[in-house]
Amino acid sequence: MDSNRNINVHLGMIRCGSTTIQKALTRAEHLGAIKYLGFRPGPIETWYRSNLEADLIEKVIRFYHPVHFDRWLDNNVHLLISDDDLRDIWLSNENFSGSCVWRENSVSTKIERIGRIFQGYQIKFDIVIRKFDDFARSLFFGYNKIGQVCDEYSFLTYIRRVRETGIIFQLFPSYLHQLSREAGYDVTFFLTPLDYIESIAKKISCDKEILYTAPENVSESIVCLKSSKTIWSGIDKHRYLWSERNTISDEDFFSERKNLIYGHTKEPLSSDFISKFRDIFLYDIDEEKKYLSEQGLDHISKFLFD
Image (cartoon, rainbow, N blue to C red; front, side):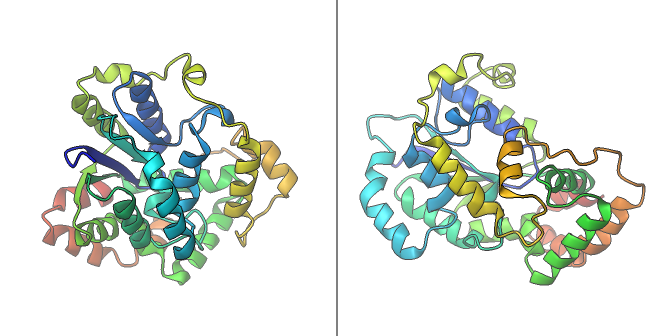
């Protein structure tokens, strides 16, 4: 085990250009510059290099019971990393920073598991953010795409219900920053996905423009999963059938999942949408700003909320 080898974890946040980042990481992997463990945008057969990698990113860290996690760790961690491969490693999954469904493991558990899996390596957490108003629009269209909401009213109603669970605070940078620092890891914020991609290019001594363009033959460079349909049917059901506001049938969901569009409205949002969303979502914004200020991160607060 090479203790000088870096483990770079793209921790989130959700709706902050993760697909763009993952395309760049796929490109960097294709160039042979990094070892990438994460989602690769494209045909379903190329999402992951192996069942082991798919399990790690989509199930082991996010959902496994502690007993199953310990068993997986004992039997598989030695298969994940080769000491002969000295390239830095990147992990990427925006859902490490939150929950795609409410029953995922806590963020603190996910961070702790990443630490145990890559024990002995230098782990660094990277958090990409975006301006709050843009985040609100992206969150709405994200839920709209999967058919979970159909208009602004149903979305705002859903956000009110989520607020009642007390988990909205997990979607703020202070939460991720505090958990990561308490676990003993360095944390770096990036204000845009392009800032993050530029940092990747710098680390691997690559022209950033190269990372902006996905490789044409990426499907040929990745080992396809023979059992991908079985894996992803199970994972998608695991994610979405627990949703209380699921508005589409299983058959419709899986037929439309590939296109990522369920066919709901894409009309411009009303002028007061952001104002209403802010009233619901930013009910504790003063505490958020206070924490960021205490940590010397006033520029993050200003970028997000002003």
